[in-house]
Length: 574
Image 1 (cartoon, rainbow, N blue to C red):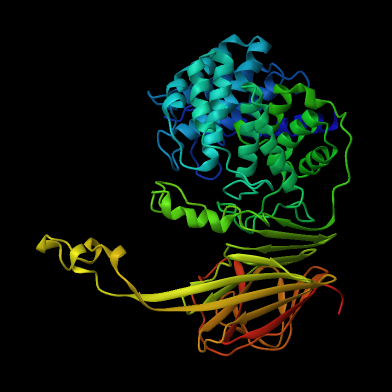
Image 2 (cartoon, one colour):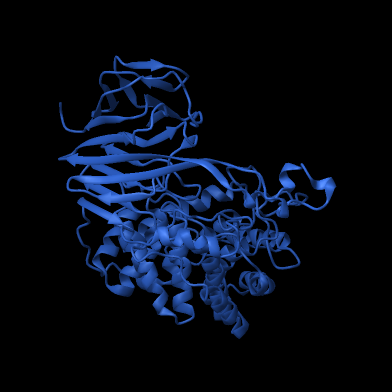
């Protein structure tokens, strides 16, 4: 019960804080809403007022909370629910305000959480509050039955919402709509990677959404996919508890995220499977919890909705701290990319992304406080942490394309891994006459010409290779190119602003950007360090496609092809 009691205390503090941020001016169009700390105005979303209602109700119905059946809190919940009903459109949807207007998926996030809150209030005997939730949910049904989505994870948010509504209204149309989404197939590799590769945010969204879908619609086979993602995440946690976000396909890319969004789903699946590893991950996740999360994945709401997880009766395993793990090593990504040509959408999905890096190989290495990630089809191909000393990423740019190089292939070698990329660039000839526009007014207008019929001429290629080898906890990064001469290349190392860099070969070229021209380089963060050998400066270009990053230090090494260059990274004491 320790975890449960800890969550109650945290939630009580949150409850007090949000009471101070509710708009109580009756003339305001946001009357009853809770001010968002980022925008300064309320929002009727799963991360906005919806999440606050989850915290408040989780306190109000809980005899162990100091807010249990508190009259003031009941009144504030009532006002917040009125705000949600006011902000709900005639079509049953909500609009976050910061994006996505009349949004079925954003409504689905709220519905999944509000359904759980409705059951709690019914069980508590709080009929008046429950009736307002019932009205919101009933209004939302039309949008859930007809509404679409933008992103891969939105589909599972909608199936969760549909399943929760079915549990209340027993309308078979809700099941049929959920099955339409599920019939598309689950977007996950056998190693457990979801399409968006979002370890910081959207993995947990898909996991908890499919848990509800599986349980409420009796489709427990869906839990296999949840398990696979949770198993994968065991190897995607840095020593300090942060999750690996270096290759995300969403907004968590290179941002700080911890495991707290996974706590509830790890706890639920630990009990479902009697899995000691999942229990250990749940315990690790709770160490960093300071907030309860969005309404659809609200932690204390989950503990109250699924009270069996309040008991701490699952054994806990020892989590691995020493490993080398290849993820998606045999996923057929090349074949899938090739198949794009015949799908018919011409590589364009409205208001969404193709996510063609889905299934790209990733290598995770950890040895206690040392953590490294090797990445393909990603802006950065390598990151390394030695305690607090962190190489956030290493990128490669060339003048051939020009711009950033994202490596396609990963090959395992005796002492490490090889990343490869063949860049192609040619020219195009004239459009054959039979394909030219017949309308003379359209002739010569560049964007109206059928460019797909041009023949390629003088096509050129440039092959680049990165070999990453490890000896103990020290690393060698070897940059190789083919024999083509005079291609400008730039290797860029990224560091945190507050970390110290020392080296005689460093030359400042901007506020936080440097050339590393020669000699050694040392990265210091507290008592931790990484030492580098050695810089290079063969051309003067400050940028070959790199953009200025205001919140990071950029260290650049300039070379000209053909290249055979080794960098040594030492984490051991030198």
